[in-house]
Length: 223
Length: 394
Image (cartoon, rainbow over all chains, first blue to last red; front, side, top):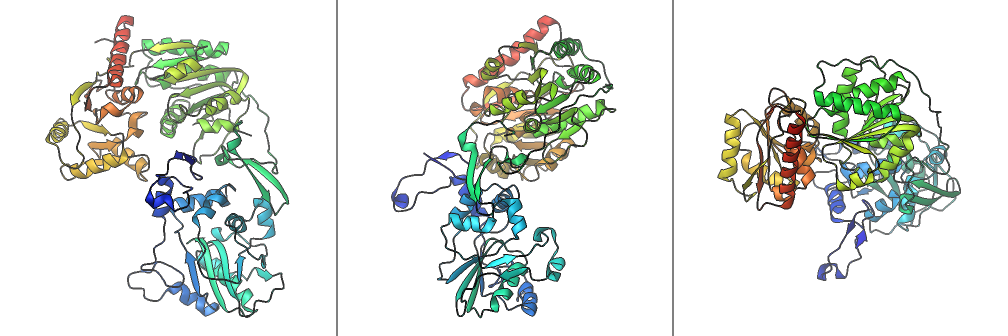
């Protein structure tokens, strides 16, 4: 008998040849089913930013637009769509401030298996973190036991989620580098919670590019 | 904490690097806004204010209703608690109006709560219609407070927001989920009550557990429906449901329902089973659909059903309470898997309107269970009791 870390229901994991060499599951079957529904499949999506493409859309318009302003990232890694259980959990986690859910998210997230020199979380402004009492990105990374460098800080800015696409594009770059680490020719993974337009990560990228990094990937919890 | 929980598992502690200290908060009531050890809580003092509390009712109360109404009024005056054990369709909501009027005219704070959102919506419609001059706060899922909380209609969780405030709390459908499995919600009622407070609990199917919990209070038994007709008695029929084929027996029953121009609810106890069966029959009937609790179109479908768009609805137990409509019959598939209370409630959907006081209640089973017999016995006993009191005519 184990307790599901998400719904607190008790469940029994079958003990057989299939599960014998596996780590014990932390989730009950119905919660796993919900996560499975929100899985992001890569078919019919932009290779780079995983945007779902229209039937007659060959090149991703978002990437095209971003390319006109920024140097593009190398690849976005993301396992889940921002809908269903993922949307609900992220909402409860970020807005209702249910920090216990960081554990749940950490158990479901898997960083890309590539080797990176630095993992850098996208910061929120200090004021927002103080109001929230935690940083939603680093908190999950802590639970995943990932070593990361908080290289960036953010200035105060309006919440991205209340702004439209156009408004977001007009904002100036809110990020600054605070630590002096040699980034030349390094592989970097940026981590954020939700990827929508890509403007946030590309702003952060523009800030970091000054340091001549080599490869630049992005990981987000949901897309 | 606003929910007064003392279970350690409800609390979560973490180290906040932003504030450099440990933070503890409660996960049990986080939906009402997080309570922790860093943010201050603002409490407004409980006040009482007098309003006339007049109400309009289109009809007169029946003999039974006025009897119950007087009992409740007396209890309110004396700050005593009562359990109203009234059969389905007895007209419970109308019985509380007089007590509410008295309470408001004395400046008492009044709360009408229920664990089910559907019931809250239905009851709030009837109450706001009757008490048109009152400032009534209707609180559920994102409906915020407009007035000062002297008269609220709400889901029971909302009581966590009020402490020692109400002088009259009326709990409708006390035995419904989640109140039946979460006794801490009774604590919410306790903490929301003023020193002088009367509680009125209303249900059609009090569980043993509930009667034990409330054994200190008097029970008012109301065995008759407001339209003075007896409750429909369920019929049993053997039927082995096979979800992967069309079965003539069920098909014929449903066809007969359509030719008789009756609306039919078909109850299932399993969503998967219901969907499979639905896929078999959907081609045979035009006005057929299904609803269950996870259905996003649930509210629309129920509304369409009320407007007469669907003649046959496959449903799980979500429609077992608080649903009223004329010319309605019910069929329960696999009734051997249902509990006594669910069966009584389901049977109680039928014949609730004055213009259509009876109908068909059919339990399709693979073997009669004790629970089915108990449900039927209970309904028959209520009918007999009502006949003895002279509250029904047939």
